[in-house]
Image (tube, rainbow, N blue to C red; front, side, top):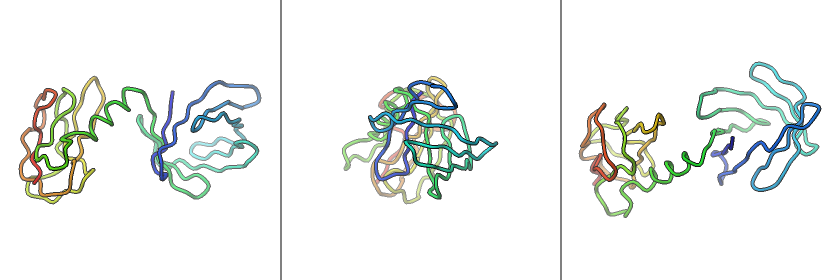
Length: 170
């Protein structure tokens, strides 16, 4: 399983390579291998040593796709990641690519499970407009530019094909 930390200035990728002895694992973070040893594990708090440096982590919220935690006093979100997730996130970010394009389009086929914004409201680039479900995964389709959300072209529960127009942003 791979993980991504998204609250930093840049995305850090990591994965567990193998378990060694004595509550230790070998991990790869940003392309470099590190030794991690678990010292204390509670219900939602952990103490560990990463490359001879002590760290304290407290889990605030844990879901199937991400974990929100505080690591050494800094809030972080760790996303459980797969290659498919990366492809879908990139496709979602490119929805309606072309800056001046008014139409926000679906980059994947799926079913509309949530409409997160209302027509007539102001949206910022990156705001979630519609959530699609495809292959049992939910994908947020985000605004490709700042503007007024003129129209939502889909209804909750509707099926959409790739490149269908989901909304119009002016």
